[in-house]
Length: 406
Image 1 (cartoon, rainbow, N blue to C red):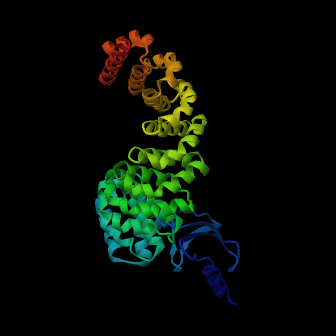
Image 2 (cartoon, rainbow, N blue to C red):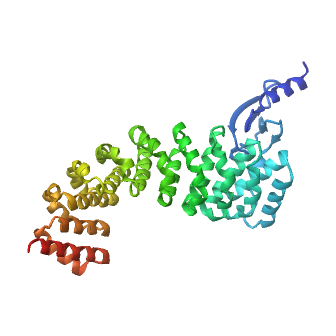
Image 3 (cartoon, rainbow, N blue to C red):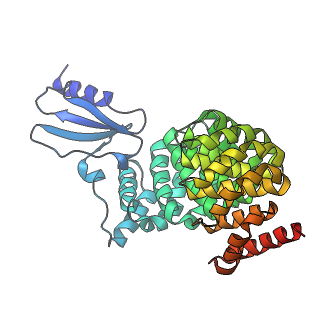
C-alpha cells in the first residue's frame, strides 16, 4: 500500500458518523499513523482549533470528509460588519455543504456576545430546522437559543418548527437547545408553546441534563394555563420524591403553581413537603413552604403538622422562606387558631421583618389569633409602616382583635 493510500484510509477512519472530529496531525509520523482524534462536537462552532506549530497541525473533519481549518471556525464577523452578517445569511440560505456549515459556524460566533446580530437570520435558521442533517439543526438551534434569551418575541413565530424537535429520537444536544428556546417563548407568550407540554412530560420521564429547564418551562406555562400541565403531575411528584435538590425544587414550584387552581392534585405531597422544610437547600425549603402555604387554604388540618417547623423558619436567613412560613401560619391560624396560638411572640417579631409581605402576613396571622398582646405593635405598623399593604393588614388585624374582645 502506498503512502497516499495509507493516508487516505487513515483520514477516512477519522470521519465522524455525525458532528465534527478535531484531529491532531503529527508531522513526524508516517502516513497511516499521523492522525489522532482529540475532540468531537455536534456543532462546528463549538470546536476550538489550537494554533499550528512546526511539528503539529490540526484539522476538523465532518462526516462527508470535508476539512475545516482554524480560519474557518475561529473568527467571527466584526461588530460593525452588518454587510458580513447579511452575506452569511445569504450563504446559509443559498448554499450547501462545507460553505453553508462555515457560514452557520461564523454566525454562531457572531451572536454569542451580540445576539441582536442574528435577528434577521431567524427565518433562514427556522427553515434549517426542517433538514435531516443533524449538524445543521444543531447549529441553527444553538443560534436561535442564543437569540431567544434576549429576544423571545422574535423567536416566538418559530415555535411550531421548534416543538417537534423534542421528539425522543432527537440528539440530546438538540433537545437541550430546543428546551432553551421553548422556555424563553414560555416566559414571553406561553400560549405559543402549550402544545409542547406532552413532549416535555416525556423528556421528564426519560431524564436529561436539561430537566431543570423543563421544569422552569412547565412552571411558566402553568402560570397561565394550569389545566394543560395537570397531566404531568405524576412526573412532578416522582421528581419530588426521588430527584436531586434542583429537580425537587423545580417540581415543587410547578406543583405549587398548579395547586392554586387544583389543590387536590398535590394533597398527597403534604407529608413530603413538611419533611422538606428541613432541607439544607434554601430554595428547596422555600418552595416546600410555599406549596404547604398554597395547600393550607384547602387542607389546613393536614398542614397543621408543619406548624412547629414553620415557626422556626420565621428566623430563616432566606427572605422567601420566611415569607412562605408566615403564609402557612396565617392560613392555618384562620381555621385552627389554637394550633398557632403559642407562636404569637415569634409572629410579633416578624412585624419588624425587612420583607413587607412577611410583615403583612404576620398582621393577618395575629388578627386571626385575636392576639391582644400584639395590639401595640400592630398600631405602630398601622401608623408608620412604609408599605400600604402592611398598614391595611395591620388595620384589619386590629379590628379583628378588638371585635373579638368585645
